[in-house]
Picture 1 (tube, protein in one colour):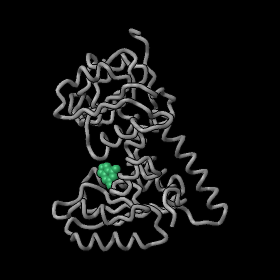
Picture 2 (cartoon, rainbow, N blue to C red; picture 1 turned 45 degrees about the horizontal axis):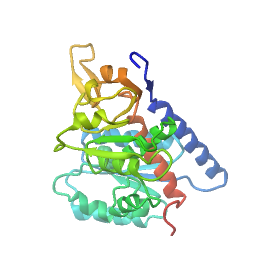
Picture 3 (cartoon, rainbow, N blue to C red; picture 1 turned 135 degrees about the vertical axis):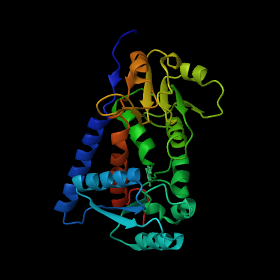
Picture 4 (cartoon, helix red, strand yellow; picture 1 turned 60 degrees about the vertical axis):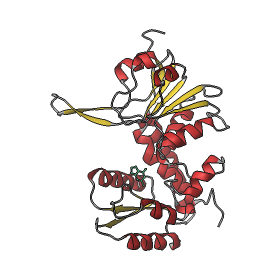
Length: 298
Ligand code: GUN
């Protein structure tokens, strides 16, 4: 298969298609005289990455016709005040779903905060009830990045049944749920999954057996061409800004050595433009599900 071009999985286009579908559905809701879905983001402090993520969420929510609100608090907010805000949002019938932007300041116990979110409104899918329901294959909110990844695989028509899938990285919000989802029963699932992490001793050998590799390890260009078999599908979750001598002064790379790995792949996600654009769209999909009470009855 040498020098055969891989198919680039176009996350930007797939995200755009899904947004169009959501937008259409919202227009129908409005045509029926109903209020639009409402997504709230709670933002504490002024971390630059969190600010830009929340403003993207706001912009994209509005683009599909959702009502979007941001509750901003200073870094000094107490845990109690934040818990009270969550209680308020849980009881507000005009709010369908909300997220508490992470990370939170050190003096706030993030676990306590997430546990207080009403699972019916937990569009991040971080509450233990939603995590448990996902493990049991019950309908639930799936966290944005894993949801984006499985959607890319589905919409690209990639064969998964009986395939070996290696996931690199075991974080609670990416690696662990991706490994779980890919192993579940169902179309575009049914993989035999190996979850690799910092203590795995033979990552290279395991990767060489893989038909699908999902890399979410947070290390620039970790996955090299000699770790990948011909024809593999590679999903790159990383995004890193690397300083260089270019005019811009940096370039963007993922967890995969794209230039060399892509030569061996059947499909690969680019960085940027692969997994990244899918995350907010997945949050929008979850919010629409929350609005429609798809997973939980009242
Ligand atoms: N911080 C980085 N990613 C996320 C996310 O998906 N949800 C929340 N709540 N915080 C984040």
